[in-house]
Image (cartoon, rainbow, N blue to C red; front, side):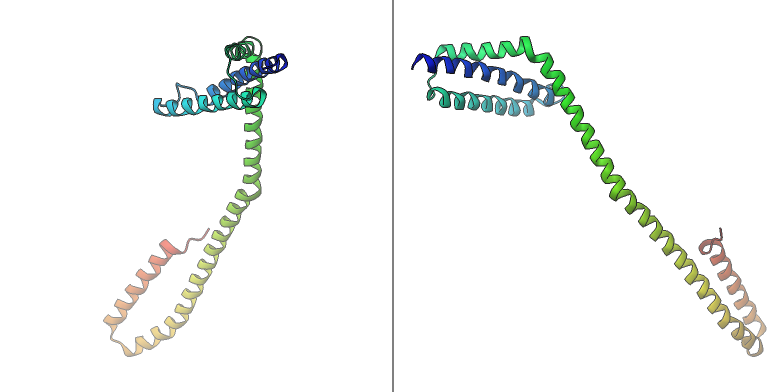
Length: 189
């Protein structure tokens, strides 16, 4: 391995150490141990470190054909330490700003969808419900008028043909029928 390759490997591994620091900050922000179960953390921790190991290996493979030397681990530690000492607080503030911005945009999109589609659909459904209610009341009133048109001539005919006690029973039934519909079905506002 030439001196140029060694220098490029040192720079690349220092950058990868910084990357691991950034990735660890993001991982800890979204998968905080106090919020998750231990089995879930074991799975996500294993997956996280496997991905980071793969990143280190791919960068090593690209820079120096995958040769592992002791100074590579020192460069990784240097990059990670530099990130922790110099850039972690700035990166955390920037990450929180990005998260707040994304959440704000998501809230705006949700409100835009609600105001564009959901609220008008609810208003339309309410209007259709009220229209159906009005049509139902109209049809019921029309039915009552038609029944009254049929009932008046029948009543006159039954008075002439039926005995008086039957007429009293029919009148009682008619009053009960009228009271039932007047109480529960036809509400005048």
